[in-house]
Length: 284
Length: 270
Picture 1: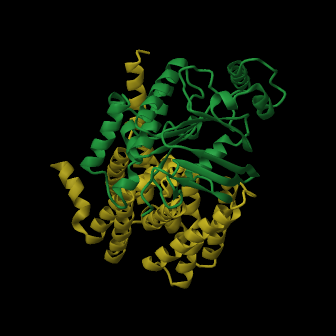
Picture 2: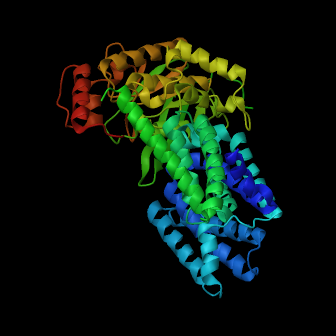
Picture 3: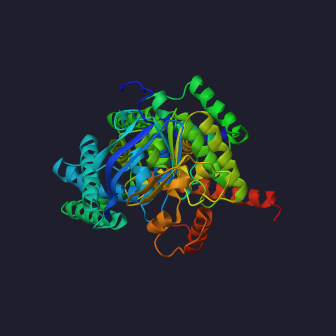
């Protein structure tokens, strides 16, 4: 009874209900995309992409007159795509190694973003919002936008699952089947970018990587087929979103930090349980 | 659609192909050869001779800079599912979360079509192939949990799932033990029974169980192409492999010597 009350108490306000929904959505969608990030070994790229959207967000923030969600989404997406293109251009002839190119573009864009935000008087508060997220006060329209982007991302992954699986597992098969390898790869990168931008408000730039990687890595410990991994990861992402929300409400800690810590705790538990289970099984 | 295959058109026709990759633009120079339906061709040559490059070019992983490759008379750029490719084992991430069933199903991708998931029929096809290659018991295994011979056979099964009539195998015997070698040779015999044309790069001609119809000795260009007794003369081998190989009476001995050399040098990519 008491637990039910605890769960129900925050839900009296519409804006809080929206926050709960948004966190669950963002957790689930990020985990689905994150499975591809994990199996392709792209976590550095994911982190870099999340940070490199800062100047776009900052620009729409300063020029667009504060927190207008649609402007932020567009600005962030634009900056993310621009960064990905610059990285592709720098590495086109292998003159610069890919991880170096990613690192250079990532810090340059991030620094540019900080420079733009620092022109504002409310500099510190704004930056904190963008870096660490704040789910409170998400509007109905913003929630729809997050839901819409999530639906597009998950929908495309369901429709193109076997192609994304092939380009992630064995490029030579993709070529021999004459699949459009490069367009598929770019689409996958774009889906990662859209997911990051959609999750911006909930967890912020700095913590985005955890939402992509941790549920997927946890699921990978548990199952050995990609579509199972995606199913479990999305479930873990949603649960982390819900648990993180309540933790945030009752402990008065930012939602981004709570959801990330929840994913980490689940990962830690699964990892420890599994390694002790393995030790038991192997009789060591 | 491409023309239906005719009896007259050879299974694989490579005409004047030049190809290469970044760092070695001329890995292949004016390659010409012709393989008839159901034939088996072993491709041999020293390390760096361009064996893998040739295979990747035939399959379409690398572009052709000049010349043409046709499969049963159809240009390989228009017919996408006719060539099956079994890549070198070290090119695969064996920790990837995919089961044997999943990997073989990947070969069905073009049959399934865009935006669709495998149908009951596709599943039945995959199960049949697994049954046929004695892999049915392993269907649920993660690919990393397989032995060397089983790994090769799973990728052969994947190529079969493409309904392939020409299959290209890059070093299928590299890094496997004798049991696995026999396993793979038995699987190749099944393929030949199905009239599948095979192109196999190998250092392992020494195994008497491996029967081939023709030998292609490659070193940037086609040094020799013909029946084993014609191609495998000491003079031809010395020409291709250089003076590092001493004169010996028997071609088999020469090849075994080469195998030993490869082993000492470690597994090299060609």
